[in-house]
Length: 114
Length: 114
Image (tube, rainbow over all chains, first blue to last red; front, side, top):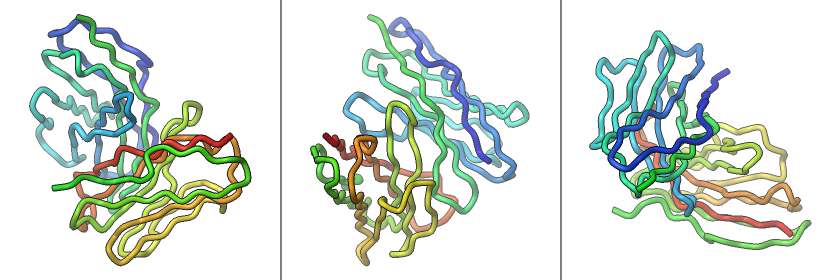
């Protein structure tokens, strides 16, 4: 069975610093996709970045990058130059090949301090 | 391009009642999936519909049901509401191709059962 583990319940970071949010996963499927979402207090899940299991390069989207280490089964999200608006819950999720079902981790609450 | 639209955004129901939530996916997206988010259980997959057919179902009782219409809009229904059904219900849509790298969520419907 698929499993996503986010070991950091909460993180506090100073504005403009870089932050790494940890995510490890477990699956027996050789083909899968990894997602990161941001959820502000309003509830909306905002798509940030995607990494496919066969992608050779780490995904990047603006200030977001995904540190994908396949052998270690980790997919950490790196946010560069953090901003106050980055304060939110962050969820790592995994999708198996051919399915649109996502399995989520428990999330990390990120707080950016001025 | 409009995002995923969920209605209503907030609602309060009484135990024993039933509720219907609606989701309009992004134009052109044919896959719609539903998730329940609670503080205790986190984000859990309810079901997924593609071209009016349920493709996948999570581990929820039969009180939870859904359907998808020919225009890809989807509804989910919860009958005989229990206090534990209080949650944020999120709808997600994705493009027709399988194994897609884009799954977008709506703002969610906040359900309170009293």
